[in-house]
Length: 278
Image 1 (cartoon, rainbow, N blue to C red):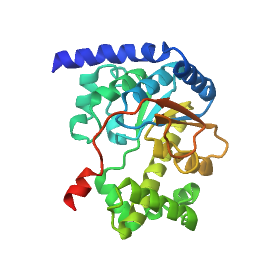
Image 2: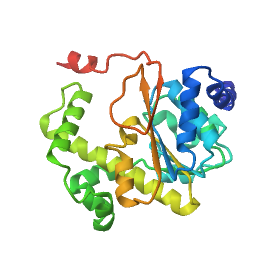
Image 3: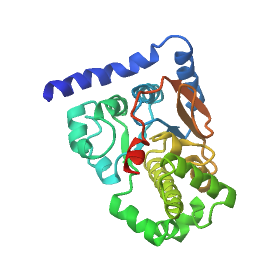
Image 4: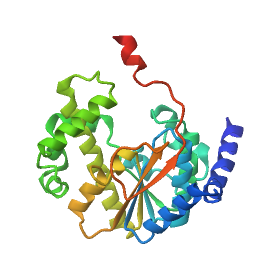
C-alpha cells in the first residue's frame, strides 16, 4: 500500500506538467481557460467525476492560477479543517485523513493530482453531511439555511415553473426514467441545497482569504445557467465568477463560460441495474 501511494505522489507531482505540456487544441484550450480565469474572484472548475483527464486539467489550472483557497464538493468542512495544507501532495495522508475509501467517490488516484496542486492553499468543504441533508430536505432548504441566507441565495422562492419542470425531467433522465414522480421535486431541492452549500463555503473562503477561490465540483453544480454561479451572483453580484465545464467527446449539458473537452471514459451502462431489477 505504501508503495502504491508513493507512486501516486509521483503521478500527482507530474500531473500539472503533463497537462500543461499537451500539444494542439487541448493545450490551447487549457491556456485559454487560464487566461479567462485569471483575475476572477471565484473559479468554478467542473468535472465528470470519473474522468482522469478532467482532474489533470483541474490540477493544471490550480497550479497556474494559484488560488488562496479551494472549495471541495466531495468533503465536509470538518474534514477540510482537519487537513494539513502543507501535506496535500501526500496521497496516503490525504486519503487516510478523509477516509476516502469509504466516501463513495471515485478512486483517490483520480483526485490525488488535484489535491497536490492545491498544496498550501486553505481548504474548505461543502459536502452537507447525510443527516443534515436529510433534515434539510424534510424541513425545507430555505428553513435549513435560515431566512436571511435563503433570501440572499433565492431559496425562499420556488423556481419558475418551466425551470422546475426542466430540472425534474433532467433528474428523471439521470435516474434512467425509473424514479417515482413524487421524488423528483426532492431531488431538485437536494441539488439546490448542494449548490447553496458550495456558495456558502466559497463565501467563507473569500472572507477568510480575500480570494481568489477555486471550487472543485461536478459539471451540474458548475453550470452558469443553473448551478452555484447563479446563487453566488444573487448573493454577491459584485464578484467576478468564471465557470468551467468539462465535456466528453463534445457532449455536455448546460451553459459555462469556458468548456474543455476530453475523451469519454468507458463505463458500465448506469441503467443496467434498473433494467435488471425490473
